[in-house]
Length: 175
Image (cartoon, rainbow, N blue to C red; front, side, top):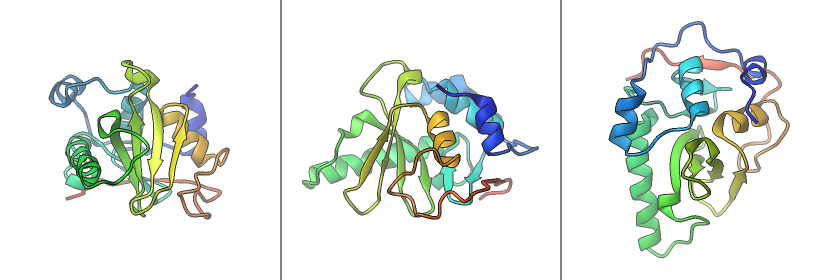
């Protein structure tokens, strides 16, 4: 279960969160609702990186590589392309919605197949050019807090991530 105070203690939110999101419009364009813990993350942290390593995709981000809507279309296409070419994935492309990436290109996804309720979606992490795949039975904010507080270690991530002190680096003028 996600505890906002626990994440705030693990990683202090920035003083300035420059992105205001029209969630109704974003969800309308996407065609599905988004998890409430993700909306909380965007509202409290905004656009930036956790520990200089993990980036959350944010609606309206000026850089396409960090824009949730752009990345959803791009990664869905890429996953379907891989399946068409005979690659094996642990999940069907339509069961995955990308919400972030690491500096190494590791992709973070919501796994939507377990529930129509986005607040019950779980998290999966896949390496960009390899078969390693890990899943977490919880939402994105709980996953982030658990990883960043070092209560779990993702084998895909480098051994030195996260460092003992994790900071959020806000990206204010990204283009």
